[in-house]
Image (spheres, rainbow, N blue to C red):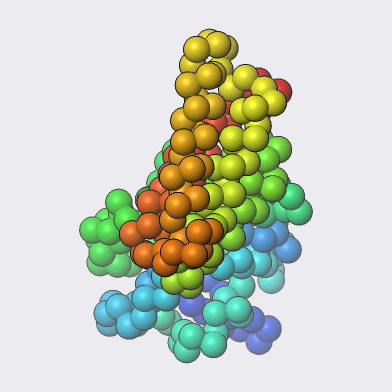
Amino acid sequence: MPLIIARPMNVDDSSSFVEIGLLHSKYPQHCIGGATIRAYLSRLYNEQRKIVLEPRKSITLQVQSPPTIYGSFRLDMGPLLHLGIAKGYTPEILAINFVSKDVEIPILPNELEVDAYDSQIKQRISEEVLILQKIGESFETIGILHQSGLHDIANDLTEGLTRLEKNDYEGAIKFCRKVVEGFRVISERQALDSSKNRSAAISEFLTKSFGLVSNLGEHYGTYGSAEDAAFSRDLAITVSRYLARRVLKQA
């Protein structure tokens, strides 16, 4: 959760890219030409190692095969060129999940590594590592949900996180509420714990949590604040990470 890549952007005749040799070495079966990666663009450093831009946005990027037998695998930076990223600048990218149709595979689940070209930039990243780890954990949860077969809930969480990035607080609350509701419905169909008492307690917790989030945001015509949206996001992620594999186990 996840691999943080901070390598200079390069340019050749056909594309703008950063090299991702470390990611390929860890995931040669997934990190292939044409693969899609769910990522997060955190900050951008110029050649003097000064932070010149902080997009703080989730993105999907494509893997490119090496142009020669001796080259490295690359991450296509084309979708980000509108931000004005120049050759030699270093984007700070969290590589979070491999995306394939209805499946997302977390990158380095429950771990965090840094692939940085410059030692000073690596130090700057280490100073914000807890924030980056939390961001990575949020989007990593989408992959965990897909792996458990909870595709609709995964899509709702994706939308909730995206709405929050856009400061659409009511929309974020709405979709995070749908995440909780999805688990509440599941808990009514099947036990989520081998203990009958714990399973009943989980079901009651989900019902009350759904009721609480339903009283935030647009659902009842109230105004959803940033704090309400952040609370809804944290609740949805915590519920998802705790229950996703229980649903798979109990199915």
